[in-house]
Image 1 (tube, rainbow, N blue to C red):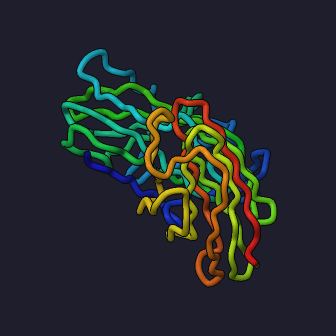
Image 2: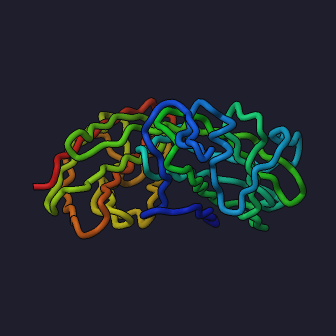
Image 3: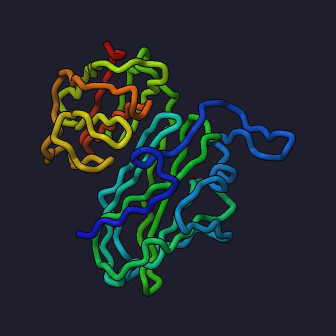
Length: 283
């Protein structure tokens, strides 16, 4: 299996930038100051993918025969305002990959097309990394995406509901979720170095938790995945690091490094999972 990663304005280990405000307004210089998640056209116009071009026209229709197949994708994903989201999925194709097409659901101003994934490989993993500027506000929207192979065949459509959460600090970090990837970044500005504790409960259905400072993995319910994207799995066949339990993770915070701590939860897929966690400030 070949793994392809599309880089797009990575910050730390690959982060989006968001702000948390409501409303959509323009400044006197006619620059958009904030973008609502419910404004599909405006939201799509500010998305950025390496090599991506906003094209007019209708979203391509899946081919009836010879189409590439996309699978093992995240139906939902979440992230904190100001930070990262990476979307992995599997593909199989008899004619490789020519283009990737991404669209905000309900957008009528076209779609984003990129040929940065061009490949003759017949199977592998694609990791979408889509840069969203800081003026996008917290809320939710849905991304749908396809690939087109080198023979012009169009894959099935897959989609991910993206939730942009309000920013958190160590004093108020208390997060709950379910299946899919959830990236929560804790703003540590003004905090001194010390030891932090994360208290978690993944209940009976197994999930995985990983903690990073910048790009450095600190601790987790499994071993270091050597990637900002932890493994994903079905709830019926949990991988190492996926546990159904409650407990604590203790880790150091170094104020001389990144001012962010990012907690990544991989909620197992297809089993109605639920999880929650909270943290303490350094002591």
